[in-house]
Image (cartoon, rainbow, N blue to C red; front, side, top):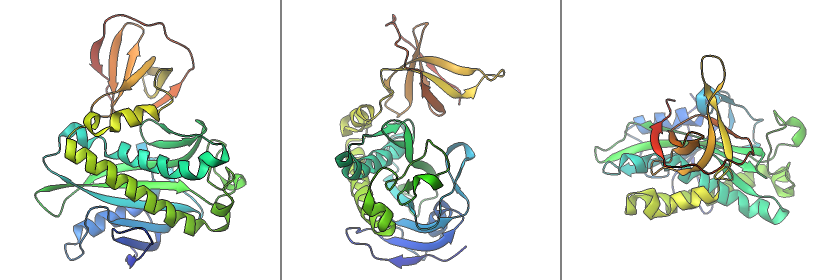
Length: 294
């Protein structure tokens, strides 16, 4: 694995390390955490021009041309006293921070930037511009819990080279500077993302839960699927049929998605792929709590 080099980026106070090419910035971050000779304070970040084995949720790969995206992993240090439900909000805090940073560039161009539960950022509710992955890691102190947030934001790719019609980039959405100077734009976005992440995680740690910290309300407002009929497309049953279908009613204190089926039961979905059907669901009666197995 290529050794990372410390670098300086304007408006980024946390340590930033750079590698030209790596299988995954997540792996580099984990290696830094394991090396007790290298300090890795809160929000230490690794960026790369190329990932040969970038990955997303459910083992999916993440591949992009060199120098055309913000490929980053950020180490987050949390007190061990943080409740488990609050810990589940780290990935949502990152998604909200990325959404906020992208909105400053895309909303003036007439685009809406929203979230797709649990970890994607979409343009106009349809085109994916960023994916996020979180994993826990051994901490350097018995008083902290360490998590690594990996995120990839498409910046300079022209539409013709994007892997699918459902993918997009800043340049493809009309951000001219993103196409001309993708590295400069990536560094600016990183500064905004880390500032937003620091603000949200500080609030989460201070309050101890996502409701009091304001994260739950912010996340629900950024999720267009709330209040619509959805299907849990993955996992499926033994016959390949979606496991659940119903109304997305909101988020649980843990960050799980709440789905109310036609029988009036509310299921707590901790992971999986959801798709909107656009079909309104008639309000139903009393709610029972169930948990989807994912």
